[in-house]
Amino acid sequence: MTVSAPAEAPLLLSDKEQWRRAYRRQRARRSTVVATISTLVFAAVVWFGVTHTPGWNDARATFFSWNSIRHDTPDIARGMLLNLKILAIGEVCILALGMLVATLRTSTSAVLAPLRIFGGVYVDFFRGCPLIILLYLFGVGIPSLQLSWLPKSATVWGTVAIILCYSSYVAEVFRAGLQSVHPSQRAAARSLGLTHQQALRIVVVPQAIRSVLPPLLNDFVALQKDVGLISIVGGATDAIQQATIDNSLTFNFTPYVIAAVLFILLAIPSGRIADAVSARANRRQRAGAVV
Amino acid sequence: MNRPVLEIRGVHKHFGDNRVLNGIDLDVGDGEVVVLIGGSGSGKSTLLRCINLLEVVTDGEIRLDGEEITDPRIDADAVRRRIGVVFQAYNLFPHMTALRNVALAPRVVGGLSKAEADKRASELLARVGLGEKAGDYPDRLSGGQQQRTAIARAIANSPRLLLLDEVTSALDPELVGEVLDLIGELKDTGMTIVMATHEMSFARRVADRICFLDGGVIAEAGPPDQVLGQPDSPRLRQFLSRVVSH
Image (cartoon, rainbow over all chains, first blue to last red; front, side, top):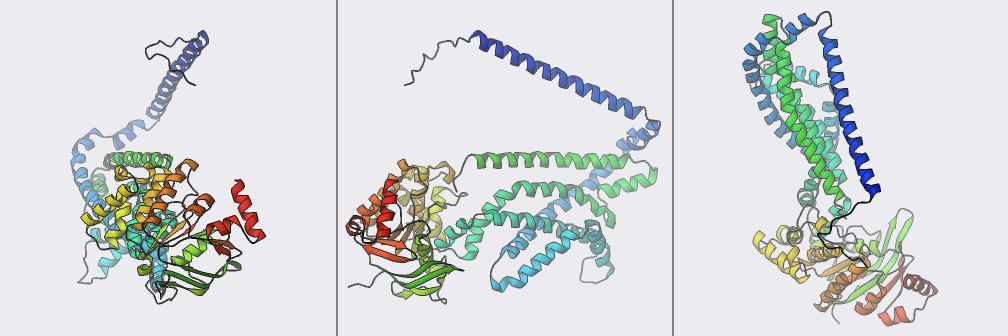
């Protein structure tokens, strides 16, 4: 039997518990003080170490020129808009293409055997080939064919190269997701009379996407910076291309630092979103669904 | 006599060298409740999966309302539409609410509009005592509630035959009763049911016929009082003493 104490009765702590709590408080205070001091010391050592290198004054002028920051930032930010455009269009195509290839690779029907093989070759080729070479092959190679019915823009073909590369990664992420859905889910769907396609679309794919959201967002963050590689094919001016132009005029590297800061600022919110999504997925799993 | 709903003739199912079913013969009449008992690995689940075409039989034939469903030319999806299945592990779709789970088949397979399917699903959930839980996701429901939702889902398209595969085995003992009561109600509505179970007292109460599977064949069959009361074979006596002692 449990007898509940009156609600407003004050809880009288024993001397021992009071001592334990005081001890824990003291330990916590000490940890805070130690962490603060060690951080300050570390920062001071790094600052002192870097600023007392023999070339610090030159390096500061080359990488952190106030003049360049004022003068070049607007142009580089404008270039960043092109990166954002490629990112937006690219990600949509990557997700669609990735899911298509993943469903092809996980199909079991005999009719689709050639497509299954195609899916395997696709992933092997585009995931295996270094992105920078894909960019040259597509961004420079295809326009050089001078086919009148193909777009000639290096930016378009560079974007295609990025889409092909990333969709092969995303296809494997989706494939893992599709395979992580327990076969009993498919059995339940088929038992209700759903066709193979209906079971896939209504039951399997939505669960697969949920389970691979964190790795998908991770690939998205990686894509955010890799869209900067488009600069190597020339053509339109993105943030990094603009930084290269500014650098070639003044031999100052501050424009690259500016571009880097812009890319990092772009990545931070996506990273936080990815963390939040992972945390939520973990919580859901721990909530203890039986199925 | 009317034609049986389900006719099983000489069904074998082998997984490589593992001969799970070795010639099953069974007729199930309209509105009849047939209970399959037997040790684990005796082939109860495999037989149910063969009836629902989730497994391809190695030999023999199965007829549903006289139509041979083991014919490879048959539209398996169309056959499954006429058979409801409830699994041991519920297998609800975790990304859908209870209502969506139940409304899915009437809408996608039965061709009802979304509003009609939702209405039917609400009625069914109310009937299994879960009218309040329609908007909840499966992980918010207790095991018994999940299994009752799964039963509502299985009967949503008014199947000709309902297959129940050890539907109470995953439940806490205190939740078993609510599911068994529901199955009893289904029997009273005239549903034709084939079920595998370890609930002997329930089998005795609800079954028209009990089949004891052993070594991939139906070793004994008959009314509950006969099979459970005066078992012929030592194997069945041994099985019953083991099950009852637990």
